[in-house]
Image 1: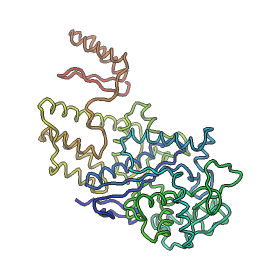
Image 2: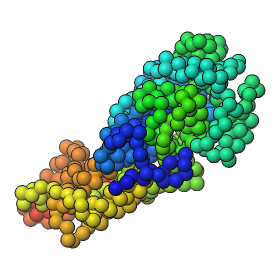
Image 3: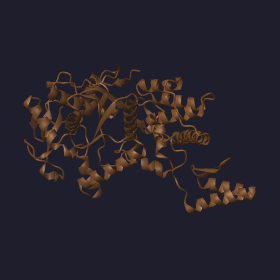
Image 4: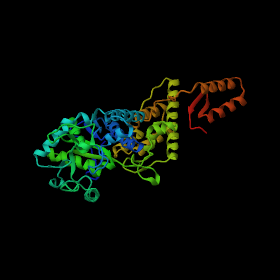
Length: 472
């Protein structure tokens, strides 16, 4: 079965042909660690996680590299404004290094809560300054750079196909936008910084010596240097959010291909925005953004957000509402209950989960993934199989667990991981005793009280089953 992925550069789905048979090298743009990642950011990482898991399902050995931007990302894509790390340091009264460390840890706490697989290689930008300087030197030798008052810049006019990823209309938009805050010294509006000089009045915490003077790397050069360091001059797949297409990834392509004369990435993949109703895409600059921790504090399992993101294809805009989160949490709970009951049934009969990888339901699931990671259809195939009256339980559960290797929804967890506080545990036990004593009036009162406190109890042939729900 051929795996077809949408390539932004070619604007079409193409069969995935890796550089090396059976292997896939992937570079994914990671977080800028000056603040918490919001749930819109996390949608992109969830898409990338599904890509990695799907490649593994299809038999590829994956080498995924993710950067950590801990220097050089300015507040404006036009290479102006303050470094976001320095901004975060001033905001919180800490050092830029402490800010980077704190928000890197916070990011991966959320990342793991969403059950995303850890990258094979993590690249903090501050650990690759030598490689970045080397790449700028290579561009300088080939005549693609020039120096002005605030830094060393890439001359986009010397690259005939500059902007091919974004397209002509996008590049014209960049040029128009650049004029608003134009640097009069730049030769062309779209030219971008490779190395920025430290201004004496900045009092920067993060700066390094270079052949051009003390300063720090441009945001774009970081990813090119780190990707080529670990994956070579041409890589199989480069991923990110759609906001990277017009500037960041466009400039990565320009500097990388100018330096090597080779294609930088054979396939470019981008996730669409998560939007908040009429307010548009979620952004940190707008304030009031939602995080994975925010969802958890409101009583949602983070994997309910993972399920929510699977309700739309990664290349379609997705609108966030609390109603949708409620529906996703309920659906995920139902899936887990179905898997849990199947596990109990198999345990009672002594049988083991056994998926039939040649069965129609499994092929339907795999075909959905092979069609540019169509997770909504893959999820539909799982629901259809679990609801089928004709499939034996060992096949149902076997398929659910195999599918969950890609979905990552924790379907192998047959019972809630949460533990009840002592006072609620006591109420559950009191209700158990009330039923045992046939005091059904008291039993019903306790069931209602527990539900009001966010605990739903169910009576089964094997005794009381409980789960946490939103408080009534």
